[in-house]
Image (tube, rainbow, N blue to C red; front, side):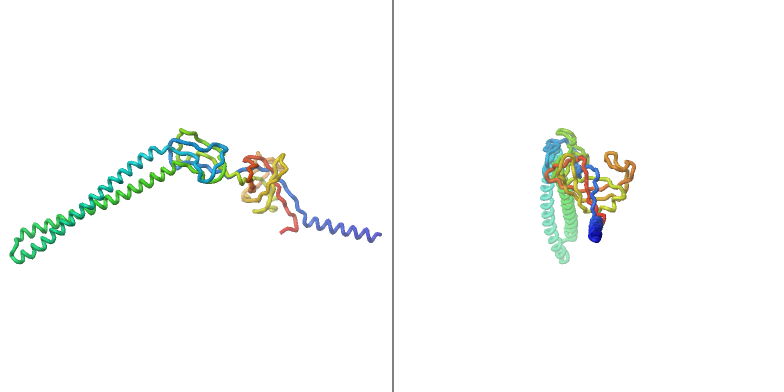
Length: 301
């Protein structure tokens, strides 16, 4: 009988030792939900003509958010296009002038060459030869001037085309487009107000993935790693949400006053962020949550 009792005690000891070796504990931390917020601003200034989205509205990538008045840009564009049309006409005149001078030069040059031979034969005077030579030089100068004028017109054309391209880009910039799929968190402007370059017009957030931020004491850092699974819980909601650790701070800070922890508020902690999938948008920015992280104390690689 004593042998049986000893054997049972031995089995119990083995079971306790095995359980202790593979023991896993779950630690829970209080945190808060946040999202990556994108601030949308205009590239150019102007009066807002039309608004298409308000706070709380869902937006798709590439969707129009607002339009800035285009009248001034369109007027400048028409002016540059008229200048281009005028320049094109001037270019045609310059090309015709070059052809005309070339024809005159060819004719005078042939006459001059013929006169040179006649002078050698005593059939023409040196004065007539010299006069023709002078006309050749004058026409050469006129041809160079005509070519230079055409080059100037070509340069002006390049400048006008660049200005037109810039105005077309400005015209595109009057249409403020959403760069992502998400929700309008804040709108900072109304129709009729003046939008300034660089100042925020909207704040957008992709609510399909949120981040839970918790703060861990240094003693708990060795129990976690990037990519580790976690569970997010809400008060009053039995359903939990799976998450993964995406970021661990490399610098310590004091516990934020908004976070309630069992440790003292003056203790140093490290911020940890956990990505939480939120396809049904049940979770909201600013919600307090509890984050459970399973920590293995042995028997786990």
